[in-house]
Image (cartoon, rainbow, N blue to C red; front, side, top):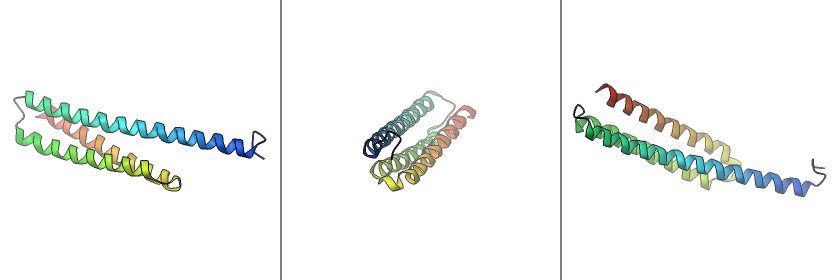
Length: 115
């Protein structure tokens, strides 16, 4: 017997909570990808404004960031389409992709600052 005295009702509530958490997680990850895209764009604009940074220095960094963003978006799509059994495993992959993207973005910012 469930904690509410009704297993069916408990299962419905748990399913609703799980769906809500998945929706929130997907929204957060979409926002992370959008924020990374915005930051990449800002880096490009900043590089164009800074005379001390040549286009040759910036272009490879921007290309790499856009590749990382594409990878993160692909991982996000896979997580959204995943079956519930493998959801936690795919979430780990998505989190890793976003961490790589954050690391690449930080490195590009530092490179622009030091140039």
